[in-house]
Amino acid sequence: MMAFLPPAAATAQDGLAPVIAKIAGNGDQVARFYQERHYAPLWTSADAAVRLQVFLRAIATASDHGLPTARYDADRLDRQIRAAATPQDVAQVEVDLTRAFLAYAHDLRSGAVVPSRVDATIVRDVSRREPLTELAAFEADPAGFLRELPPQDPEYARLMNAARTLRAADWGDTVPGAILRPGQSGGGVIALRDRLVAMGYLGRSAAAGYDEPLRNAVVRFQTDHGLSADGVAGEATLAALNAGPDARLRSVLVALERHRWMNADRGARHIWVNLADFTTQIIDHGEVVFETRSVIGKEVPDQRTPEFSDIMDHMVINPSWFVPRSIVTQEYLPQLQRNRNAVSHIQVVDAKGRVVDRGAVNFGAYTARSFPFSMRQPPSDRNALGLVKFMFPNKWNIYLHDTPSKSLFERTERAFSHGCVRLADPFDFAFALLSAQEANPEAAFRKILATGKETRVNLAAPLPVHLVYFTAVAPAGGRVNYRPDIYGRDAAIWDALDAAGVALNEVQG
Image (cartoon, rainbow, N blue to C red):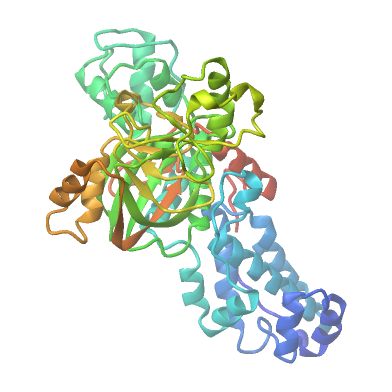
């Protein structure tokens, strides 16, 4: 793409003042930018050719990032530049280019939509920079500025590559039937074979039966999609197989947007809880050094685990469980009104923290709003939090913890909690955290555990913890992994991106 200004319109400075006068006021940042530089042009001066070309080339590839290209339409701007014939025309080009630049810089750095407007449980603080700061940084080093705009995490680039591949993908016909097993043959098995070949899970094969290579390909597919890897193409496996390239492309484009929302330093060592994958990891300089299965909040409006980032600064060994008010009033109070000895393993506590004699309380006299007591479960093997909890104090009262309900970790989908995140291997997680401050972290942990007393242990080096929700993950050296959209958040994000003008298969430039 070429962009130039006719000689007769070589300067916009004369025309900028009246154009800016029309938009000045109400804190317009573009007007302020030109006023502070005494109307010197950014794009249309004699020395601006490289700057202009670099920017136009960048926005010509905006669709590769899954951005709404109409906000900074490269072709329209190019036409407008070519048609400029008067200082006023050039001045308007100046303003339009600057607005397009600010929109592009914002969208690529921080996301094209606002997460909290899409879903109230996505409470992520998005990194943003002041418009004048962005313009100054770009003017100083155009190519370097644009290079550093998108997330620098290598996974972002891998997801972009996946999007390109999906846009060109043709996986053929879907696979019919409800269940296909090793040893079977027929049309369904042939369709399964052909689909897996087209998706790259199986080499070219003329086999008509469900043989061992086909079973192994199914296992690989199941592993990449978070399914039970039994080699049987059952209902869930066939549903995942039959999701087309466009459905997967939507997941990838949403993942790119989510990365832009987190386009900030995540911490060289941090905790990564992917709710959609039901896993918790410790990441150290890009390497997974610990991983465990997790249970997350139920798919119920007020129990879904929110997405946010915070700092984990301590753990509590032998914790008490202070029952959330919603559970006290909605679940336990009705039981106590029927039988004062219900949930006997949990104490009724007054405002001063004293245990109340249940026999002295007329539970029927209270409503959910007027009930004056709280409830607490003392430390024990039966405690709802298990024997350790990991704290990053936040207003949603979300934390990671042990649990006595170990059987739930055997499920493929694990959305069973009231919102907090339960860990399958909490002791090992504790040891990994304490390894930064204890010569023998396991011995230090178990010594405190043996006391049976509730004990706070501060982390000498507090860790960032990120509760995220990625249904598409692009690991290094492997295929993209997909997970179900259990909370429906990705569907809502895609709807917002679609409304903003993001297209699945747009080709621009």
